[in-house]
Image 1 (tube, rainbow, N blue to C red):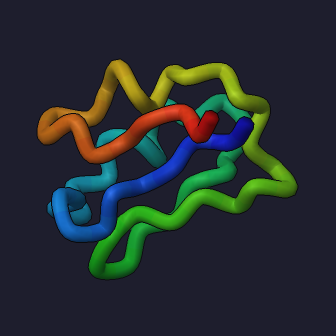
Image 2 (cartoon, helix red, strand yellow; image 1 turned 135 degrees about the vertical axis):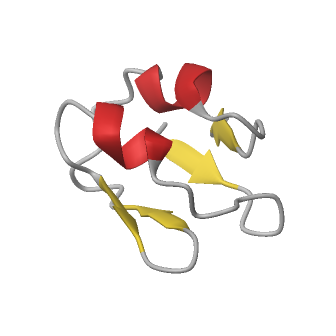
Length: 57
């Protein structure tokens, strides 16, 4: 399952998009994941400083 962003918790810092190996995350005011591109690696989950990202179940 692709990564899921909790938009209420996301601060839009961009840390997740910087570490995404497949460039599946874009950031405007908050991060957005393109589920068609996401490789489900979980790298962004560990990088998020506010724990706003989880892997969908």
